[in-house]
Image (cartoon, rainbow, N blue to C red; front, side, top):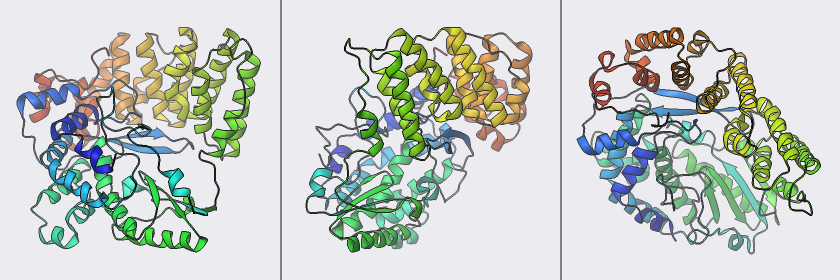
Length: 497
């Protein structure tokens, strides 16, 4: 299938539903939030929300190199206006994607919105369908002797919203029609998600992937016209060329095209390598070279320990890349382990999570469920995560500590509403409120409600903490569209929570 086929396979209504009902919250957040009820409300009432810039919730998600990634959760009314603008102009966007990808012999962009079997959402970082979307790399390698790797420096935070209409209709048309045209509407509603800022789009909402594809596909069109053969994964480029000179020329051309849209290369991640190169990263081949299943079909304690130790060694060799450890944990959870091996795996992963918080989101599925962890041991781990979050200001770990406490119905040893309020972290405060309400700690519940009332007094404070304030306060403390949503019984927390 070509790029346009993936886009044309989606109707405007299907895209609107996927973006609004299932694309507001990043999958990097603890899985207790939903916007499905909000989508249903919008479908039933066709509200015309106020058109204005809004602040957004800031949330840090730990990356695989122990550096936080800034995620954004937009105000739902502003997000709905953008989703609706995309829906109303989807036919224009489909034609655009057809035009800018028509010159591609293979599909250059590999990660984009698409229909996915058994999924309600339309975007995932790691989804692929090899029958409909086979990799072109093997064909691109033929008669090539060098490979260029490059990526865009801080891609989403660097995207200039005015470059959206630049890509769609050209700079001259966009600038001569600043206050009109569907292409400038997309620019406008994208700005509203980020308080009217023109530099940067939010990381997290699925609309951001579509918006980035508008800009990056225009750059692809220009590079393909120059006969470069490459693939792109969001903002990561891999180009195959005949000579080192060609490799350097590709980087020159890529930098020039990026600059035309106010983007730049990340020179630290730019590399030219001589072919042949392995089809997968070297560390994946290394870790897969170990045979850990015994003759009776299980991974025993000894092999489990050796496998995880080897994964730690490789991770350190790769510059502290904890993706190696994540991969190893998932591999083990897909095998049959002896009871002793499961006990060892659980304890070792607990230890690793406190060093590499990036691994914490794996705990529920790949450790607690797989190893059948006793509740007291889950509680002990949650206590350590909470302490780490307060002392080291890694609030994502604290969010998961509360998430586990609520899900598995246990009390954390030491927890303070005041300390959590002082973090100023919206998701942390919301989960804390749900936790204290569950254990019937009325004093802490009152403290959080009082803080929510204080935040509600200022519109920007409200919007930066809208999930917490909206979910905690009754409708008498809310105004305008928020009050209407509350009166309709709309919640952004999943019903089972």
